Length: 166
Image 1 (cartoon, rainbow, N blue to C red):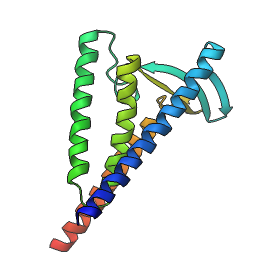
Image 2 (image 1 turned 90 degrees about the vertical axis):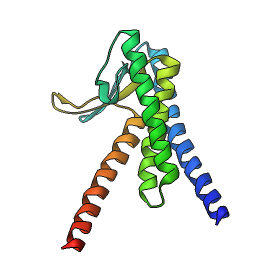
Image 3 (image 1 turned 180 degrees about the vertical axis):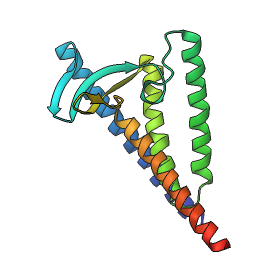
Image 4 (image 1 turned 45 degrees about the vertical axis):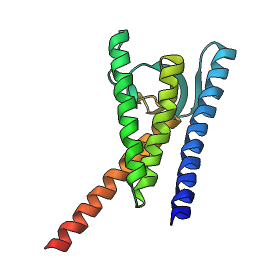
């Protein structure tokens, strides 16, 4: 039994490391391009540009502050949330653990940037004509995918549980 739990822990750690690494490699690549070219504004196709911005807020630039106190309080809040997600991963016994791992791995990537650069580099700019979505990075993709999957699972499971009661 403990061997299975150990294997599960190793697999979970490897997934978190993979997500973190994918995020770091993509950011390092973009930052190296920015250093060479002095900026990043690359047209990829009619729906995607690579455009480097520095995000001091949380998801998609929400709550961006220039004040150190507000930035530090948000960073502490993010660390607390990451710790709670870690506890949820440790206590999870079903497939939802993988969605939590997506959120956790992406969150670690963005936390690293907050602590190392004091801002998170975002660079994917999806748009349709002049309507631009938030600019985001690989970590944000994993976080968003994990959250969306958890929401769908909860909606489906709650609906299933509700139908079983009736």
